[in-house]
Image 1 (cartoon, rainbow, N blue to C red):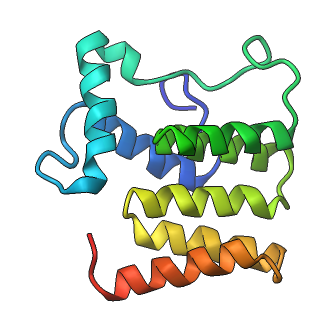
Image 2 (cartoon, rainbow, N blue to C red):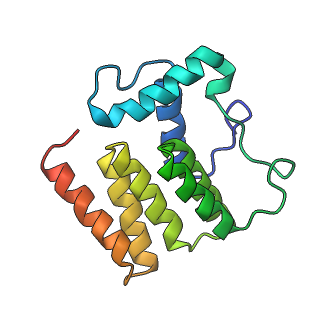
Amino acid sequence: MVDGIRIVRPHLELAFRVMLLGAFGLVCSSCGSHGDKISDQANAAKSASPAAAIQPAPNQQNFPSLTADQWINLSQSYFREGKYLESIAAAQTALYLKPDLAEAYNNIGAAYAALRLWDPAIQADQSALRLKPDFVLARNNLAWSLSQKQAGIK
């Protein structure tokens, strides 16, 4: 627990750090297209209030009966909206409820790749494939992240 925010997994801790840095304009201040979404989230958070930049961890009062599959759906919705950090957090919550959910690792990998954080993207995709070796989407995401990392895309 960090300042009332539950850190479920190491991936989420990194996402939390990136979110905090982005909220205070310390990340992607002069980045290319990948930073636009982070900057937009950070600017919205700065204009609202510093406290609005950090969302509390879901609890039983906010989400009383969401299943792991529902958290996966929420993660996918956040991803489609360009809310990559929220997507990671929702997928991490799904993993908390169901630790062997390959789809959650795949969502985490896709969100990290969208943020151009190749190492955690690769690690998450590899975890998805360890759980579900025939998971074609995770295999494709892993190949793409590896190629982007090799190309030095930042």
